[in-house]
Length: 81
Image 1 (tube, one colour):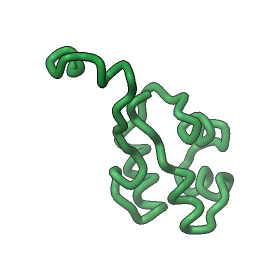
Image 2 (image 1 turned 120 degrees about the horizontal axis):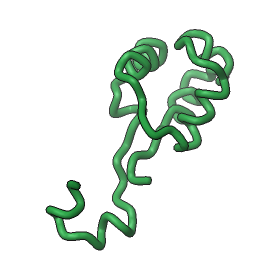
Image 3 (image 1 turned 60 degrees about the horizontal axis):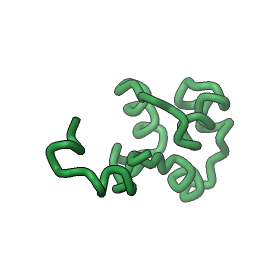
Image 4 (image 1 turned 90 degrees about the vertical axis):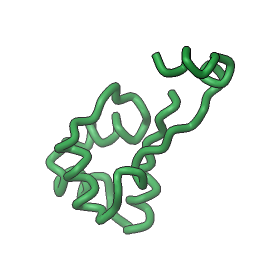
């Protein structure tokens, strides 16, 4: 998946556990694990806002786009579909 979730990096920087983070954001630890492991298909802006508030960071600190083999092999106009 070309979007990588970097919650684990921000949690480590703050020495915050998944359980503590989940409680402060209002998610279950299981849902945080889904986000951390890249299995989420979507993130609500309200959830992203809460995560940024708790971690005192920007959305770009939590989400990163990385080119994968499939995307790199497509023409630029095809990759945007």
